[in-house]
Image (cartoon, rainbow, N blue to C red; front, side, top):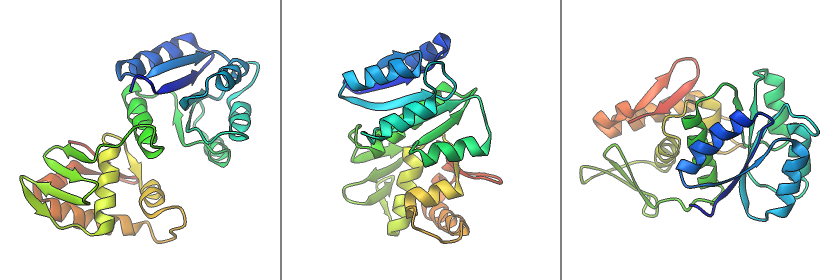
Length: 224
């Protein structure tokens, strides 16, 4: 994991240090830039950057400009940080190809969890084939789930939903986000599909089903 490089771009040195400290604890190599122009210099010099954490408001060259330039030549995952919480900013970020959008202030632990989830999706982190989440054993290669040695019969989508929850432990996930990631972006079904699958999944997991918490008005969170 120490080989995985993450570029942190923010004009506030305290913010860069905070993010760097938490990422380095997890074994990542962190590169820093205090403005967009410096970030692009580092981006072109370093050929193995696995992810960029990018602030929006910066001198010289703001986050939107950096994102546009990076996307001209690379699909490297980008997490956008901003003090703004307006919907139009978030929509602009996704239109430019931003993978995650986090408003300040934020929990560094949640940021690290999102970094790890994105790196798993982009294959920068080799995903574990067998995962233990609070006694739920998930074998991704065999598409098999067991609890206390007993196999739990799940449908394909129930398995994918559980795996997605486990990969994003501790993160509140909206129904739309779950649909986009488990059913893919071309799925136009009703978001209530999620509720139906969660209800079935909880039932099949027994007591472990309580790990899937409902976030009222939003979606769900998997927490052991």
